[in-house]
Image 1: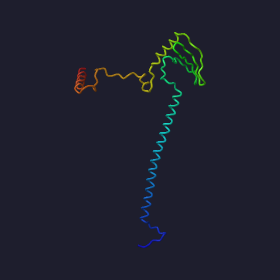
Image 2: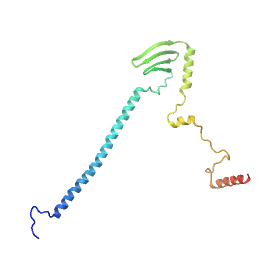
Image 3: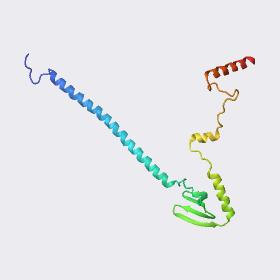
Length: 181
């Protein structure tokens, strides 16, 4: 074999295999880097969603009154909204009632109700209407407006209930009933 000059274009098999190995390593690194970038992106997205959820729960807790206040002595028996952040409420305390105005700037007493019969009537009305079940999901709302599904009451039995002998007997009875007609 003759020696080749430095500027020759003949390919050296040793260099070709090392260049291929370097290219293979670079492609493997870029593939694993892509996977790690994806995993990091999913992790950061999960953190952002969790932060939004916690913020939403915090804001909801601050703005929504707690419904777990079942104090038998102090009750909010009536409320009407007058605008954004403004309302008039009737609060009863055993045998006394107070009409208060509530706004973002504070709470102010409007009047005091001393009529015992009126206070008892408001408390009674509040007790009756406080136990009304409020729908919590879309399916519960649909259940209010849609009638319940009726079962087949023509024969009193379903083909799918019972043992195999009962099913066969039921089918034979239906066959005889249809042949008689």
